Every structure is written in structure tokens, then in C-alpha cells.
Image (cartoon, rainbow, N blue to C red; front, side, top):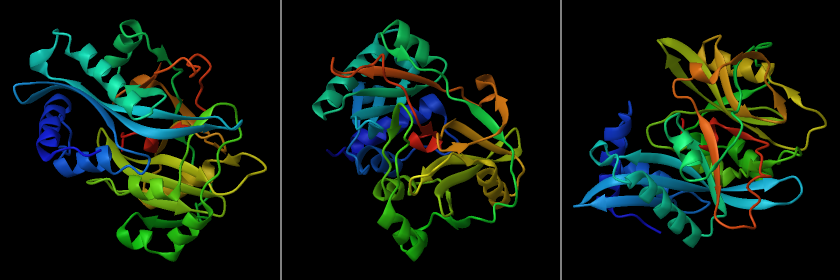
Length: 310
């Protein structure tokens, strides 16, 4: 599936108007996200009138696997927007319902929505979605120097290096805990770290591949743990202090944030309330068919890099 330039330009115009991104979305950034994902193209629900996009909801396909061998393809819901000129006219519902049809055509089993505080309650109350438990936000405690990690910026040279070739040759293992986790492959990691306009750092140890970035909150620099990938089966959960230390050292700040669930790495620190997040995150779930046990679904792993926060 491909998207025309005109369609992506209309989409970018809507999203930039609604969200006022610090880095405006471009045709290239949307084409990267909607078309080039190695799992498959996005299912993009929309409402258009007079050559204007009034509503948009993109479902980015991701494979989820469980320790007992189950697998699902869920569309990770992003870019849900309704034009200010169209609110109150049913565009929200029409947009979301259009995304259902497009996702079913592409073989998705359901939707995992990452919604803001405004959208999530509407999706549960009006559309019958299930709200999942919030995932924790932790201000992590760095332990040690982080010297057990090799750190590289995610550049074309890194992806051509022997270091990445070694990572690609072994791949990653899935959590053995109850629930579903996103299936990450080296190909998916390569694609995800080439997002236009964003910078990433890769921290590599004997056991882990960790992705980080830096941000500022109220002018204060923070290192952000975006993803922790396990390179081989582990006998025990690893302490997250060394992960926090390599991220703190790389980004030259004592403040390191982790959001989400990483079952094979335990991040100790100060739990932060969702209200302290710049944009509180809610997870909601919808199934496309009765064979998907929506009520029994739980996430064993999910972090920032699993959607479009960074």
C-alpha cells in the first residue's frame, strides 16, 4: 500500500494544526511511518471533505507475541486528530470506524491505542474499548558508571558497522512472563531508529541492547530510556541501575526517565504520577474479531519506542 503525496500533505496539515508539534510533520516523516514499517503499511482511517482532511487515525502494525506461543497483529493507534472546524459533527467516530475497516482489510486482529487524556475516555465510553492499566513512570537511580556498555549514535555508519551486524545475527529474545510483548527484530529496530528528525543512541552490553534519547522538561535535561531489548535468555532479571548509568553518562544528566514495562530489567527509583508527564498516556484496546480475547489481553512489555512518543 502506498499513499499519494497529496494525501500525506493533507494529513500533515491537519496533524500540525491540531498538535502544534515542535518539529512539524512532513511528507517524508509520514511516508516513513505509514509506508516503510517492515511489519506492513499503516491502516489510516480518515474523513475528508472538499480536499481537506477533517479526521485522521493511523494504525501502525506491530506483531505481539506471548510466552505460550500466541501471536497477534495489533495496529498501534497514533495520530488521532479531528480538525477544530469539524468537532461536534461525528467526525471522531467516523474516523475511528473507518480505521476499523482498513485494518481488517490488512489482517489486523485489533488496535492498541496510545491516547491522551481527552481521547481515551471517549473511546471507552462511546466506542466500547477496554482501558488497560497505566504503565509506570520511573525517575531512575543510576548505579555505577555504565562502563559495561558500548554506546553509539544511531547513524548510517552504525548500521553499516560490525557491531550492528553482530546484533542482527543474534536478534532478540521475548519475555517469558505472562502477557504479550512487541516482537522486535533487527530489521524493525533499524527502521525505527531512522525516523526523520529524531536522534537516538544505542547502548550495547553482553546481555542488552538499549535505546535512549535526550529531552528537556521545563528546561531541565533528561535522559530517556526508550527500549530495552534482551540479546539471549537470562537466568534472572537484570538491575536497571547500570542502564540508567550509561544513559545518564551519555546525555550528561543525573535525571533518567523510564516509562513502561520491561520485564527482564528492573528499574528502581522514584515512581512518578502520570499527571507529571508532559502528556499523560492512556492505553486502550479494541478487538476486530471474537477470536481475540480482549478481556484476557495484558502487556508483558511496552515502552516509549513501541509507539511514536520519540
